[in-house]
Length: 163
Ligand SMILES: [Fe+2]
Ligand SMILES: [Fe+2]
Image (cartoon, rainbow, N blue to C red; front, side):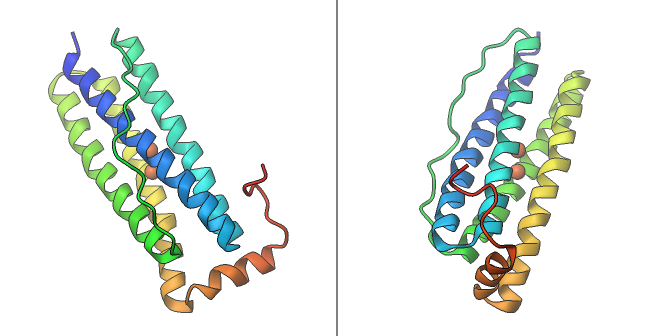
């Protein structure tokens, strides 16, 4: 009945899983660089993207579809914090544009609940974009050393790679 929605929801899950992989990669790379607070931010964001995938999967099951669990793209091996933040912002921007389109498509197909789910995800991804933009701005203004000093002031890493 809602085959189009199911296909859109599966496309979104592939995007979320790719984000989980990319942000996990950034998390342990940043942790290795000694940038604990930013590493923790990426870890927490990866967990939120996993929760998005769950929400999308629940909606697919409700609609009687199959959850494909494909991975949208390969992880990009980026080693510098500024380049990671640029990539993360670009990923969020792509998700925001895609989910806005998907919300409109679901609305046009009279599937209001899927439309609302995509709208909620747009708001969540805008929040992610904003947090990455803030960090990117700080690094541009104060240099990458800011991230190390931030770590130093924060004391021992909380929620870092060891947890
Ligand atoms: Fe997400
Ligand atoms: Fe996101």
